[in-house]
Amino acid sequence: MSASAIPLKVQSAHKGILLFCCAIFLFATMDAVAKYASGFFNPIQVVWARCFFHILLMVIILGPTHGRKLIRTNNLKMQVVRSILLLGATVSIFTAVKYIPLADAGAIGATSPFFVILLSAILLKEKVNKQKWIAVAVGFTGAMIVLRPGLAEVHPAMFLVLLMALCYALYQLTTRFLAGVDDSLTTAFYSVSVGTVVVSCIVPFFWTTPDLFGWGLLALVGLIGGVSHFIMIKAFEYTTASTTAPFNYTQLIWMTIIGLIFFGNFPDGFTILGAAIIVGSGLYVLYQERRQKQKQG
Image (tube, rainbow, N blue to C red; front, top):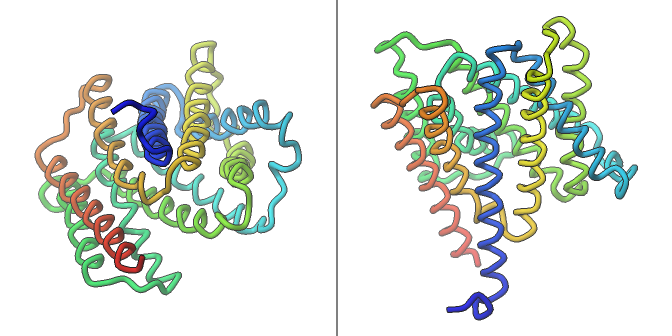
């Protein structure tokens, strides 16, 4: 069948999925570059670069055409809270990957969707059915297999990844709230603006003056992050978040491959088993959500 014979909506969905997968690949690449950069700089300085060069990219590209629209918000308080949550997630993961393999970080980080379910029930009073609770329990069992407490010494950085997953889950909930409140580009601008201000105040205490290569490395972290967000925003112009949700787990695959090629870290059997359980549970949750929507439709 030729491309012209495919319905426009199908073509758009495919394009959205492709863009989303590109963004996920770039996020995994950003974590890898951050891990490499943390060998030269304190993670706080790497986080600063992540925020600063991201916001600089947005100002250069969008400033001339959007101007004050970028900072015009109907809920400043929630935008600040959301930005702080993303900052917490970024500090946690950038610090963690300095000490642990990318595959381990990816496996534990994949528990974030289960935190979303828990927090939705606790904070938003959303009804969660039995199947989802079972999936949450199984998913966290997978996380415990990766951590394997009692069988081996658990590196403290593993718990930083759990903290990242929690912060990112809260970040997703606030993003959901702001979806109908502010323009998506405004929300993208505020994502790192507060983080830039906060980290700029504390980074002098952790500063190592970079050489030309160092500046390039730090800029690369922020530029990859900025481009990733732009691509993801573009992806949602062609398809929905629920359609792309299963492809979030491709980040785990990329982190494993990148970790093996560039850092020589191959996940052990516990990590592979735990990651498989986490991903399987997450996909089951998505399957249940789609079935529920089909019944309601």
